[in-house]
Length: 209
Image 1 (cartoon, rainbow, N blue to C red):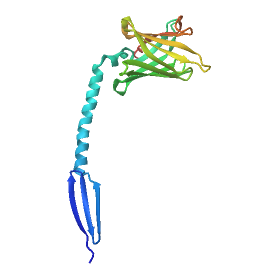
Image 2 (image 1 turned 90 degrees about the vertical axis):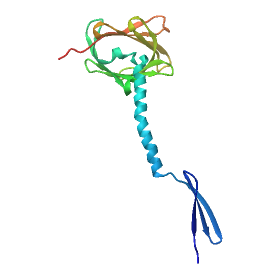
Image 3 (image 1 turned 135 degrees about the vertical axis):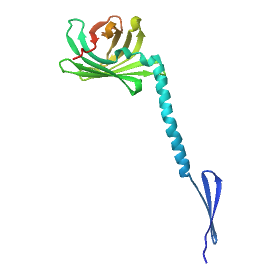
Image 4 (image 1 turned 135 degrees about the horizontal axis):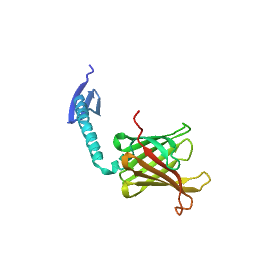
């Protein structure tokens, strides 16, 4: 009469071994066994620690002055040309992903165009960077190169041309009294020897309706 005998041998907490004996044949097999209680315990521990880690990271970010470098520019703005006083457009600058970055939403006053910027802080290099995308011009990539008096900051980058040449482009943001901001954008086509102003505007908070 054929018979089969199973013997379970516990090698350690997560491994079981089985010895199967059939007349004339001996088979030894093993597999990994992870109990439900072990899985549940691990997930419960992970679930308890994840919010604490996120809270700790957020607190660390809030305590780092580097992440607040552009706080003065956050908000809704009406933008006026400093050359003739005309209204250029509107701009909305918002903090995103817990304050790790800012997004700028620009719209022309007549609705003819729009643009967006992503400003983000690279902690490994301790540097702010900007990527500007618009439907009416080249993509611009700049980085913070200078911090000046009156808390003004300057971003600069090299803008490539399709034919292989390039020019320098820099943006200077200066906080002003009464919560305003002065923005100047300049370009140089001789490697920074001379600069031409292409945008000079005053950012003002919208008046309450």
